[in-house]
Image (cartoon, rainbow, N blue to C red; front, side, top):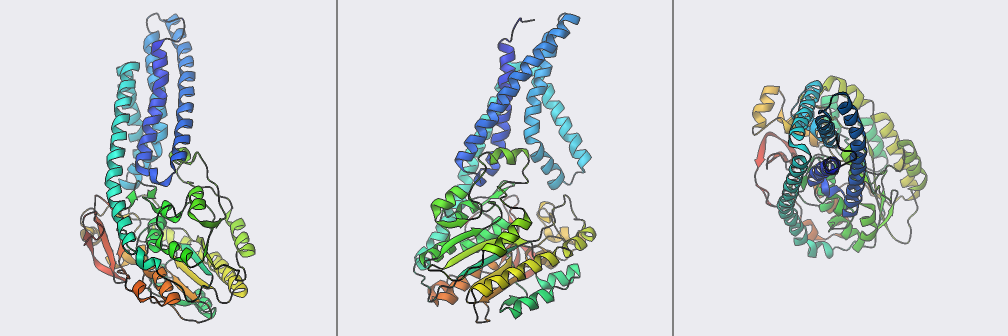
Length: 532
């Protein structure tokens, strides 16, 4: 046995930050678009420092244990040391990859949690055996090779995604001359109230047995026009709002990783071209984000991009690391829900000022997200129905305050997507033939489309009592801007009111066409900007 920490021990100690780096690069390769470069560098440096300290500490402890073992049984100390340190290296890697691994096994492969846990333990055991056999030098070399491979995959993936992202940028830029020429004849304040997972009245009645007509009647009494058959165009908040502000389809080309859509947050931060917000800014609007958390945007980029006000104007510099360890809170929560509601009711409504305001806020309900298929429908329905009383009461109170302070304001109230109570997760299990899958499950594809995409959409155009012709959210801002400007060239850029699934294995499915759910989902191949 060595009298002090030698080359072998230091090698094991340095294998710990290498294992951490491998796990970190694997995660960032899939989800880097949700972070700034500064955040990733700070989190990476902090993680590697912690892993190195852990490795050095583990080396000291393992050395002491090995010395004791050597004293009791001469010749076994080096073996004990090797296997203890191999276990420490594997523990670092498994802790940092545990969520992603279990998410894949449970959510995407429908394995029971105990089975998924057993697989994770078996993998940890296999890695431990390999590291123990390889020794310090072999383990460091293997980790270095894997790290380089992950880095190469990151670069190749970035190039592929950039192709799709660049196509989207070119598509948005193609209409930029038209968008840049839009001038409003009047500039009322605009309040955009996005409601999480808020379904349309028809689907609430048909699937949930819930009558929401009293709420819609109350909105109508306040000057709203309610579209009973409105549809979102994409699943999940980021992808849905991306199409709303892009005023166009992205066909899930920006889908990247399991935590983000490529470029969504950058566009919402005005770090890249945001057609809707640029039109508003060109017409003198101040852009205000009265959002409870910074999930939708990068605060520092948003400040530079011209967002005038944000309730949450800071970020957690270690957010990538926090997301890697426990990815359920990926933003800074400035307020509890009660504090957020109180703040909105107290401070948001205001009389018209010298410059018009565009205000974005988000409230609403929650969506189904239980692993496996089918989701627990019977348990979900009463839970979801029970969320409406508080949400509806808050929305009406907020609208009353807005209208009282600013009767000519435009108010948009819409759901971002469905709640998936019937069909959450089908996109991971339907494979290449959704029709066969739904036939086996005895589910109507039209119901799946409504479950995923049907949403509340209510519009108040000041005192007029009129509505907008929007059948889906992708044309909502366009129709509003045409109403305010009378610009026929802008009206001519209208896009199809179609709805799409998430992208799986290079393919998405068209679930709705011309604002109506389809009885048979249509495959959409390719990654081009105009798939057919």
